[in-house]
Length: 180
Figure 1: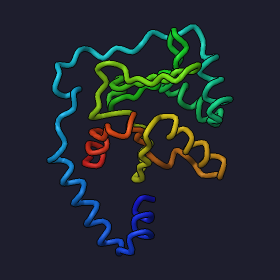
Figure 2: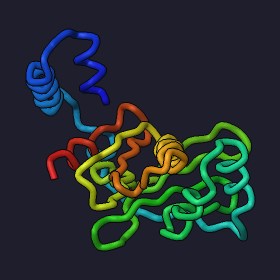
Figure 3: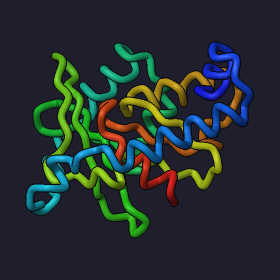
């Protein structure tokens, strides 16, 4: 974990590290300027139109990115993944009322990454499995990779919650979910 990493390389105690991390997080809450998404007036959140099939998305995730087929299928079954009309992977996250609130796209042929306009960055792409343990990653595919590794080791990947930030600088959802 990050805490173990800090402990190993700093020589500080667990308590000293937690106090330091806590102070850093509290300091960031006051120093961060509001994001563009929260300043500009938000329009309606609308998912991209679905494509006719999932061939390119399956091929990209399973054959190119080596994501476990069961993990990919689980995302599809939970309506957290589909292929849009341009062949991109669309990853969708839902709020407590099962309404889509956040989505990001990933190209399957060439490098393309984009968030769907008017996504809720305070919620982000949160995978709630009811766990007290949260794994934070930069992207959804990173989270899927971790799930695949856990599954390969015989560990139930659903015993963790996941929060891909959709980019390292977008941490509004992290602060929100840590607070909750």
